[in-house]
Length: 612
Image (cartoon, rainbow, N blue to C red; front, side, top):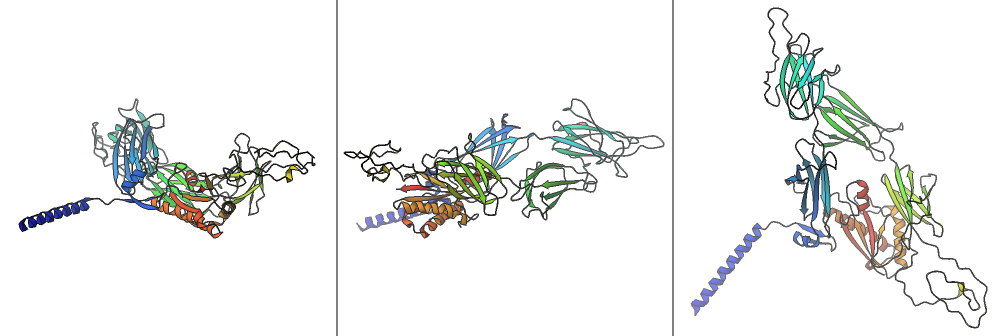
């Protein structure tokens, strides 16, 4: 009996040891799971649980040739995660592919095809409960080819006067004759395609020479070094210092390519200035994009100037910008010659036009008021500007001289005037003014004696004139047991109903900070007045950001901004239990984050009515 017990115990110990070993192995090979913040609950959730809360986001890549009317059927995409630094090369057939993402990510997508320039775009992938769709329409432009030919004396290394070149090849319908430019010494011509071309030279006093050249890149430079003919004795053709090449395909880069000792770098000088005589802005930035490599370089301009050197030919797109000014653009082709070339771009920056579109809506119906007009004034002493509404669009538009804060007054017949502070911080701005209808005026009428009082009817519209007993209708008390379904619409936020969301359009924070700016007090005080007038009202304040930067940091910033609004209201006497702060970060975007104007729309604060 003791032996049986001992055997059972040993068996149990062995089983437990084996189980612990398997568990340890499982723990060792289990990869570390990323933890994400659950925006709704303010807690951290593993990726598996996050998958159950949010549907995967889809990335759709479409490829087109030259324009969106011609799909490119064969290409490939290199998708690189800027978070993990991992890349995936995906073939694209029939001009379209799709990819699913179950985690937030920031991608660099490069789409290319042989014979075409690549298209590159950065895309930030976010998650949403209903799933999100991101689209990248990659338009690939055909690569253009060209060749520049130069002829120099094999001894003096000087340009040969009167030299001419003839270019032939399978892709040419007829020979191309080329003469050098007197200033640069180069004979340049475009080519229809890559391939092998025959280049022949003819010059007075020099031996004719022909060589083959394989064109594989967008631009090729060919150098002929010719020896003069002999003046006495038997003339024998003098070969150039480069080895002759048979008409058959040869090496793609013969040793005749000019070196830096022959060619000098080209210089690009960018000067920026404004129409006024004052010094140039201090925030000048030049973005130089090479069409050859697809790379963009952002360089500040010191004292309004920037100099760049080029050792190889290129074509660049230049964008010069500064805060408060409209950008200046220029496309330039940079050539390389023996003497070097000088290029200059004088970028004149005009003050940016600050556009404002404003419209008025009824606080009860939320419909546009067609006959409204507005007055815009500034604390800096600007003369007030009066705007009238366009009857077709319902909007009034104007152009203001500078960014900053303006006082906007909305007026319409039959409505109470509203005065609000608006901050214009971009080239295009919108402002919505909510007007509340004035209560209908009731005229006092002489008393009418009657044997019994007439009943009083409670209705939304003014009642028809009815006789009353001994006193005017305006002074007669009216009792009603009807409970309103919403708060009366005398508030600047319109009719307040349970579940309704209202965007706070005039709440401003310091950049990348939860600190409220002083001009936010106008609308925050209106929200305080609403809460003070309705003691049973409970609201949830929600904050949103754009998709730039780290996902978790954006969520934290939006939550802290909402808390700043809560702290402001609590400081004025509103009970903290009536307020709830929720940060949503880049989720639930109202516009695609494809440009600064849309990202500004996504950076917002709103409140939702929880209880009346």
